[in-house]
Image 1 (cartoon, one colour):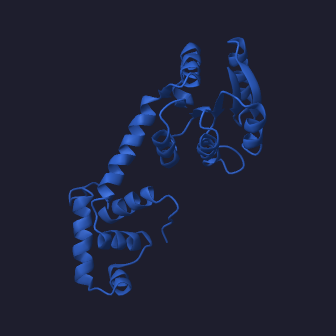
Image 2 (image 1 turned 180 degrees about the vertical axis):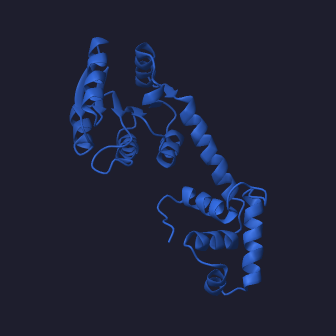
Length: 221
């Protein structure tokens, strides 16, 4: 199999290259970041790309966004994400958009070389290889998103303003409603998010955290 690797850790990258070469795979490129990834895929036409999630320069989500981009441009390219992290938002998109030739393994949970090589072979052959912990985290995210979908449009507006750090009075002024109405909306959204009075922690904070988790680009004020 022709394989491209994109991994910033030089020791891990070279280790994977050696493992794959010893298993008679051809490593067509081994990149430290995603800056030349698209060009290398186009030039070398690999069967499988092995990518880390967090790559230079920001070490946030360059790798998994690149995986989405590559699968869109090269539908037949198998992709194996190998990372320490579950990037929930893009991982959900990646898994939902494709039915085969896809893997997501957590580095710390890869304890056996033969098992890793078997996953590489499975993904390269069009199958899937998902770490159970990845699946568990994505299901947890889906459950959170389902709860947020219970909110009415007005309750969602109130929660969004809460996430901006606004007081009930400020929320009322912004939405042209009474403070009493704001309090009723907040009480209702607490119930729909299963944040009952006995919930550990500040319910307002927990509600805002749920909102921010579902809207990664939103920053509290």
